[in-house]
Amino acid sequence: MADRKLRIMVAKPGLDGHDRGARVLARCFRDAGFEVIYTGCHQTPEQIAASAVQEDVDVVGLSCLSGAHRYLFPRVVELLKAADAGDITVIGGGVIPDHDFEMLYDAGIKAVFTPGASLDSIVQWIHDNVEIQ
Amino acid sequence: MKNDVSKEKALKIRKGDIRSATRLIRNIENNVPGAKSTIKHLFPFTGKAHVIGLTGSPGAGKSTLIDSFISRYRKNDTKIGALLVDPTSPFTGGAILGDRVRLQRHAEDPEVFVRSLATRGALGGLSKAAGDAIHVMDAMGKDVILVETVGTGQQEVEIMNHVHTVIVVLVPGMGDEVQAIKAGILEVADVFVINKANRDGTGKLYRELMHMLDMADSFPGGWRPPIIQIGDMFDKEGFGKGIAEALEKVQGHYDNLVEKELLGDRIRRKALVELNEALQSSILAPILEQLIADGKMDEMVDRLLAKESDPYTCAEKVAEKYLKKP
Image (tube, rainbow over the protein chains, first blue to last red):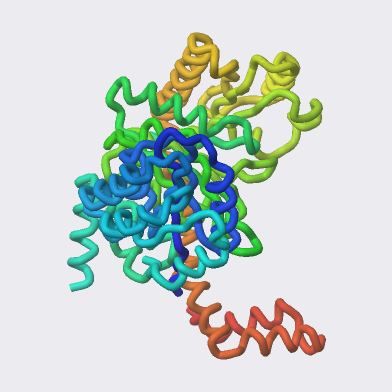
């Protein structure tokens, strides 16, 4: 009997050391029954993409509060595609202005969550949109 | 047809394809049908790597040591696999796999493959998939495979069945001298590391371990587990020296196993454990599944509760049904 579990990586790209939010999310994903790979702060998109491939995750959740999401988030998607891992779902969150959403969606970010998004809504989105491998 | 698919997958893994390797490990974890047949194709190509286990209490510094070991090994171009095990929640089935945080400076090195595993209810400090995950990395051509157990207490000794060299990582200030003579985790050490050895209590811990070792009548292969002290990681020179010494002893232990012809015993021990597990999953697991599907399991539990039968009688009846008399 197969016993499939969703694997998700929670990562903080760039020069942003505020990881309370990321850790709260990691805990919330754990409580949702996911296997959560947590990689800590100050990660380059290259490190994040390489780790996501090695860990065979279904989802990469990026958190960025520094304003550099316009570069960092699309770059992770790009690197995953280059590693033949474009099937991994990338979502993002943090302090992200409304007018950047379109640009991020176009770059392949599947969902964006900003302050005020409930933890349940994020978990529900994953349940609805991600097929566990 | 199916056989060809797993053969092809095995070939990709042997060529070092990370995606295929990590997916196979996942399919093993998930009990996906077909995963085992890929392992069958890989098995003949295993047995080349030096497999090293690290165990010790939570926060002892196992991941940080692995990180430094990897840096040192990479100077000689040694290819590395690392398996990091963290606990699964008994309530939700979820897990936070956080050991990787310490290893991220190696993330982009293509010759360092790091994979986190959740215990998924296994009790010995590893996950059930760990044995096969080691085989996968071995078949990929990794020279050294480092296996980190969950933070352990006294009893989680499963690691000894899967590796050639066990490093037990201790930190000062954890207990009195009685702890050092108890059975369990201290018995399985091939190398002791006292980590954070700049802290109070290091001398006392060292002496207690020495006393414990002094009381042993003999050591297999004459290898008395050495005790390495590794101090403050921010003191670069001292820390580096400790790491170098630890790895020297780890190599020394392996060389001694080879020289005294004991390596075969360890490999045999591992093979026996794996065969046991395979027999369990091929024989016992399907019977249990059948009993649950038929509702027989519930029936038997009801009979126990009503005191109409007992566990041994029930088990004997099941055995009678499924086991052929020779």
